[in-house]
Length: 151
Image (cartoon, rainbow, N blue to C red; front, side, top):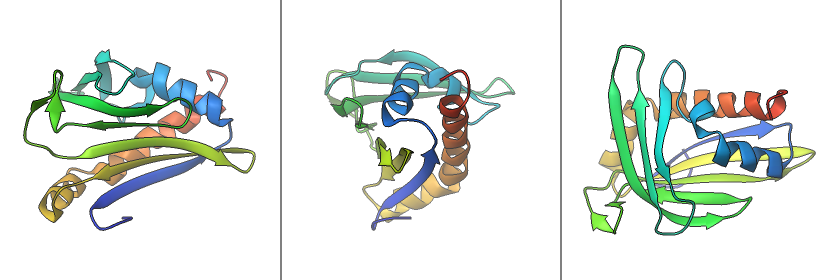
């Protein structure tokens, strides 16, 4: 855990930051959910105020909808999204703000995902859902895509 109300996962990836960014943003369905779950992108409007909507599908037929708004996109560097709003800035009960970053690190890139929470209760609830483990698996999937022939 970094910061007072943050959970974070990072990976060093043997690929350029530009290559990692490209995979991060154009191949979400291939890495964003820890297998055997999969992500279905409904809409990912890559701009501040854009809709971020996905459905996560589990191996036993589970479906979990995630709806939010992108707060910031810094091309090639990071995107920040929150579930505190839905499209059109409609407020809803917030769980977390997510920061997805990539930066140069030696000959490769450092990928980091950070979940920022409003309360310690929300942080502990997120931790209990397996955030660190699940995001670690997703980060490993991203790493494999970026370092493999598919990047």
